[in-house]
Amino acid sequence: MDLDAEVCYCFHVSRRKLINFCRREKPLVPSQLSECGGAGTGCGWCIPFLKQIHRQVMQGGATELEKLSSEEYARLRAAYIRSGKGRPPPGATPLPPEDDPPATV
Image (cartoon, rainbow, N blue to C red; front, side, top):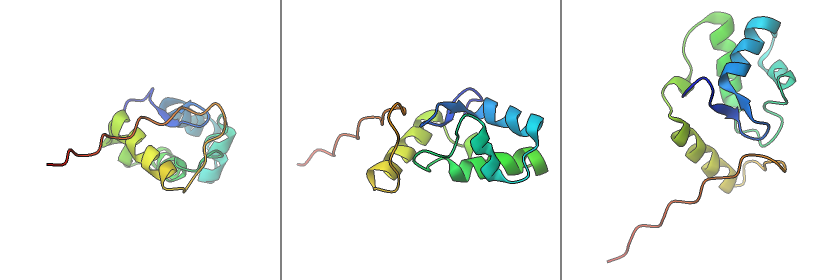
């Protein structure tokens, strides 16, 4: 996933912004990333990724975000929301359209 891609779709917070926030502010716990534009306080989808970003900046290592494309990330979030696990606030990035159902023969 590109550095300028949104991690928090509810409040439009990019991966780059979160990484720079961690480097600059040195939050003690991942939940303090909510101070970066409200990340993680909407639908909840990005919370596991915020934890990974915090760990990566503070301790090194990689995150799942390096392996995911922005499109895959958006599809996974859409599935999370559609399954009823979170509710985006007004103004959040809209969900991508659902995939077309497979054709029946």
